Amino acid sequence: SQQGEEDPQALSIQEGENATMNCSYKTSINNLQWYRQNSGRGLVHLILIRSNEREKHSGRLRVTLDTSKKSSSLLITASRAADTASYFCATAGSYQLTFGKGTKLSVIP
Amino acid sequence: EPEVTQTPSHQVTQMGQEVILRCVPISNHLYFYWYRQILGQKVEFLVSFYNNEISEKSEIFDDQFSVERPDGSNFTLKIRSTKLEDSAMYFCASGRDSSYRGNQPQHFGDGTRLSIL
Image (cartoon, each protein chain N blue to C red):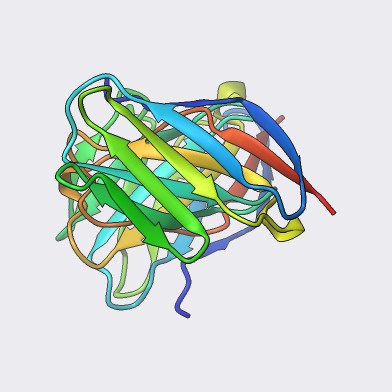
């Protein structure tokens, strides 16, 4: 299975702090994606990192990928209350995306 | 920004009844997917669809499930005889390009909450 698993399962921080979430996966990948899910809503694509990339930035998001350790991290800098959501990494062996259980991030104003 | 839209937002159905969940993918997208999320669990892949054919399906997608693109805009998931364990959020997703091995993002709708009584 390609399954990614995130940790921690839950993270609570103050507004303005940075949040780091980690993802581990089992088999080799070509790409890894991160998604956000607000409560009761669908998943929103955040960032895609390819296996030949080590780091990628998008606004306040920074994603790293270590293929030797089969792990990725998502850093959200200067967090805001609106960042409160669940965050998932996703990998794909074929057409299907395989999601982990996610990290539930709470940003306290 | 274009969105994937799903209807209804909540569907309540008696066990054994047929249910059809509807999705309107983003208009220039060619690749379509269904996922489900049982409460408190992971998002699970059901099926992918391209060029009027299923390109991949999971073990969950058994003979009780079917998908159809009846016209140029809708993409539907039918469950023939619903079971209690079919209760979940069902998400439709679409992509302009193939997301083989995750090389392109998928765009998700807000889901249909299916409750089987």
